[in-house]
Length: 119
Image (cartoon, rainbow, N blue to C red; front, side):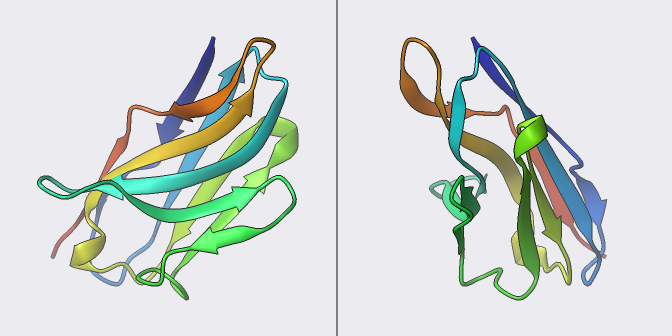
């Protein structure tokens, strides 16, 4: 069984910074992709940023230049550094990973961490 556990959410003022962390654990053979999605009530979940095992990254236009994704392969971890935050960045942030185990390759999700941005 695989688990993704996020941490680092919280409240920040506009212009502030937060760093989210996610650790994958369990019967993991390989992690092909790790990333972050976010969702606000009434809207679909959207990709914020992802990073492939090859090193390639994909970052949403709405956060380019402000958010940075990084990954620690040795520790099955992914991080999201969020700078110059805006009220529209407020959401529940979910860690996502495409993981190979002995039985299947599939997407896994964390439970989410709440980020609020307000003055």
